[in-house]
Image (cartoon, rainbow, N blue to C red; front, side):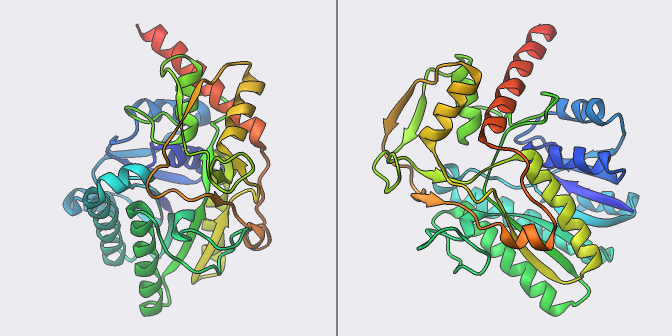
Length: 339
């Protein structure tokens, strides 16, 4: 049976595809390269020494996506494809709602038509809004502070309604925190098109001199050093969580929701200082005004996933920083060899 991975050339999607292939699963990838590169396909093959099917498709286009369902016997879907930057979503709410909602609705419509019943959804800790207490568990009240998070929460509610209407539909909603790091090979990692919106790829660009300094958005939060605190999780741990969730819904049908995080909170400057220390590089930064939609602290209680999925994080903050830098250096080396 085939597993369809939307956004499978993206940061988290590509690492999850590697995990799936390494576990001898059959995979078909759909991606439109809006925030990824075709080179990722070759990297996945080099890492795994395995092949897979690929379609360059914008999944908001129902006719194009239906071809994938017609040509492949799909049993399960892992849905990553989405616009994903909090700050950008505040500036471009219409684009975020249109893309994230329409793509999911088209996908779910075709799953119903072709009787595909297993769905793993890439959600986000942003659905918790600004939590009143920490750490965050899955039963916390849900709210959002930005359009990106709102789009994820709307989709979660759509999935809950579908499960109520169809008891044979199996869904794992994964609310993950802040993925960082890269594959140990250095062949895939977070490499967004244009100026990075997320913290770690921005730090890596500064570390090699591609960007002059890092903007730190606010130093007056109620945290240990005034900068925002987040739960950073290695992308390899996160990818493994998707396999565990997929297995879960195959054995225990229904709707399940899990936080995927380490349970530890680190500030922006904690990340900057650790990256600088383990890689022996300077990271110049400037304190600027807070960014719209950001909150002071956010970190997970991963107990439920630990127990029910038999999943836990293997990598620490130093690993995340080392692997991110290795990927960045490898990217430079590859670019130079091409030139």
